Length: 385
Ligand code: GDP
Ligand code: MN
Image (cartoon, rainbow, N blue to C red; front, top):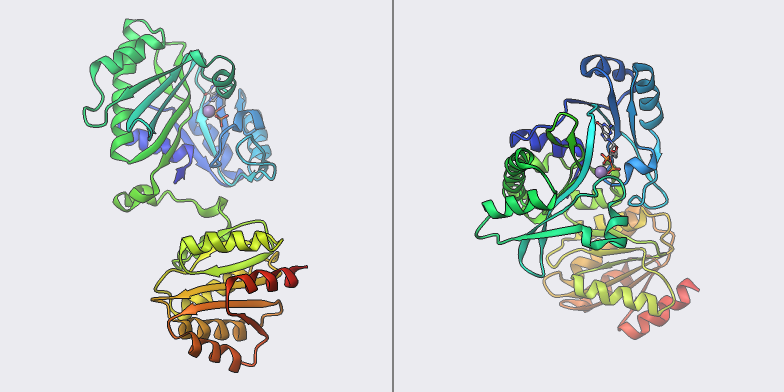
């Protein structure tokens, strides 16, 4: 789970890592008071869960209060397009106002999990700032990696190596060592998969400060961190996916026109292949789970139909723990309640399949049933063409 810059900096403060004073605002009326509190210069920063904000116009340094208010008015509510948002961009709902810092140099520092080597990697470069991707591409030798054994943890020699790699003098190396130790501790204790600071700046008076912070926390570990889980911001997620997750459905929206409901992730993948082979595109991935109830099936059906691109629905269920009669009742119940106007194809097999088919046939609804996968593909092709 990605968290916002202001939230990452909140975590930094908990670990006694100094960051510039800042105020988060969601309404432009609040900008005036925030600037009064922070003083000038002030940096106005769009808070979205994507990088590249600076180049996209989402970060502005303001030297006067007037400039700051104009920057807030421009950035808050804008649709920010960056390399990481995709062409549709992301709406800016929150803006961070932060005390401006006088930058001497911009460094790059990241801590991440290296799965292949099963260790934690500290990645750094002297060429921090907005063009790090270009540095990685054109002069990869300027990016240095220091592997840390997760069992041994971070040691003095790692810290010294980092200091030398940055080309720092003795005083700065001490400051960096203190900072890096705390960052590493945060990374491990908070179950991060990525912690990236770009830029990490050396200020004109010699201090080292993280000006940006991107943190990704391992979603599987969130149950141990209710405080971090509380950072979850669903505003930038697909509303249908948010709704599905809230009711325990495994749903991912795709770009196609055939909605599909399947039990089991493997069968779901195979079904999406089948839809493609039939010349159509899947509109979603939906795994209702092995032990789903009729109620869950109804909820899944509603979610699928809430996507306006869906022109047909393919229900492909293997009745093991989820019995076919339960599934059929769910489908009938949902189809009645929602008032389906698009074709629905059902293929089911397994426990109580005859009972299930009878429920579908007796429903009086216009549901197409097939007995096997090959006829499902043919019927589907007819439906969408
Ligand atoms: P990103 O583009 O999404 O990575 O956003 P950043 O937080 O990294 O901001 C982009 C750039 O804005 C940085 O690389 C800095 O050059 C600049 N910047 C951010 N904060 C300050 C600041 O306090 N003072 C000055 N002078 N520049 C800043
Ligand atoms: Mn940055």
